[in-house]
Image (spheres, one colour):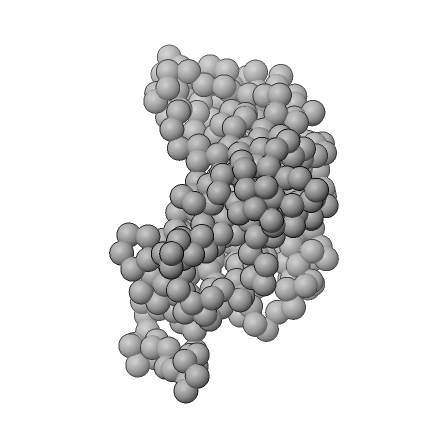
Length: 354
């Protein structure tokens, strides 16, 4: 199976399955001498882990990360950083009913067709549990990116939208509620809605917004390796993601050039930021901001028609422990993938100056 690595100079390779013994990864290219706060790494995992509130999956996993190489006396050594996260609360029997059936809108059928074999216990490598390894790598990338602040938050759940620009929000409030929406009133409305959806045995999608401050100008390349293209790939590689837009996004297509152009101030900054901090594929020093759309979780607790391996129409119903809405737990994953992109591009910028 290809495609288990991300990045060029700051590179992470992940391994493990949802219901296997452990998940983990190896980070190559992290420079030596970076102080690593292990508690901060674990805290990032805690933000992603299951069972943290009543509106997420109730699978109880401590998600305790164990770093096994690449760090000595609290600092990176420049050698590969290896880490493991043990699975301790698998209930594989919850998936026995789909051994020979394909769940609608899951990877089951295409996985079987591509590889001729699949781990049906929670989806194996196609499970969103794989993202735990990304969060560990992203947490280390964040510490390499000292001075750069990456803040993501939930801005939509279903048809409920937080229609406020990020600069009018106090993003320090994001962690004050289980939805991870920085607006308290909207967070309460979103939480009630997710609970209602869960009682109905259904799921709902949403949007995670992200803003990155302190990015220097000069990250990204002008042709195929544009910074926004790298961010787009990173976000679209996350399970359940259906869309990515940065800066003015699709709304920019409705504007005139005279409205959309970011005019310069005398110091080189811009009066507006429809570009989203990236021009010509290269960061310009302004805030980078983007939005990531997540579909409703495909496993629902309602009966649905599907097919089995023999192509026969059968009826199935979801079982087990699943998120009614993935976006609250996706916030640290979005931040982690953004950090990996920036770390990789920071090293690329350094190498270009040698």
